Image (tube, rainbow, N blue to C red):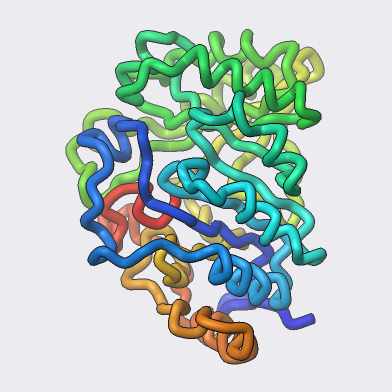
Length: 328
């Protein structure tokens, strides 16, 4: 099997595949004014067959893990079929989705039956009113019911993402710890990242994950190792807790040194970094099954352009206007 490796000897086992940039939530840090269909020049999103072909190409290039992202991926009517199509590749052992949880309670059983193996749910606050204020949707109880439904459907662990924001939830660590004490939930604090549309919000609310990490260490939490297809989270465990805490800190020194993931946007562009420049088009090679070799060659060739690091520290957010544009 071929292997995706860049000029800095980083190996890529993990694909984040966006299938839509549409979202029905209006999170303050992503789409505060709601979704507007103006980012892709009216191109349609990848079809089921195109998703099948691109996932096959990545599987043949050594990809072991795929995460379906958006926007909100479950808004696609063919979402269950997409799960099944990606899972046709035996090389892809882990298939995850990041969701706002809107349709979780209704659909999680059929997603699992189709082949979904892991689940990330966005929950930025455990206070229903604050959740409503952040997301623009009064859906806290529905999302919580969806997480319960995931456990009922057979998921042994659920990851929950919370974007860490100063004066919003950065003082809520103990509330989250109480919630995961007896639940197999990995609660992941994600540092707020600057995007093209979100500069003022970033300056107002960014806080380093170091604040959380210092508290965890003081309370006896210890850092776990990571496997080659894991995401970027630093994961901490504690003997008194069933749950875990993860920290994603993109502004920390050497964050990019362990990069193992690539991205394909909902319109079929390969993005070498969430905060890179214009993507590499793949869609012209997704029309039929005869172009798989050319598709794989373009993906491999594109890796030669991957930079050693992002440039967020200099305020360069690349082409990422908001996090739904490529899929976070």
